[in-house]
Length: 127
Image (cartoon, rainbow, N blue to C red; front, side, top):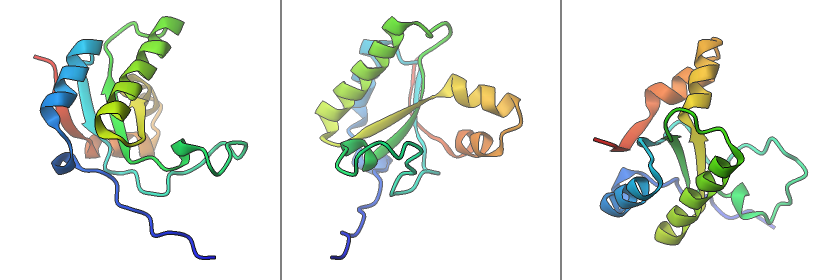
């Protein structure tokens, strides 16, 4: 049995940017960017995730800045609300990486985090 050809990741041109901006405003997102450094298939650091898990086939990787002080359990639910809204809008699986976590890795000299930040394509920035 051959595996299906992977479809390309979504790009800026595939996205309804006005609708995404509305989601960002609804949830207080300060910045949202596409992470073009990610490729398919996504790496699976958790071998216990079954092959049929939809998040093994991410269609869009995003770097999101939720602003300072967003580390509570409530915020984690808030993070998932953004993912759910994007899924409902786009009909595809979205992975959000938090910008402040990347910044912490950059401060420690982690090269991959710096490359992701430099390559990001900002699709929403709060005014």
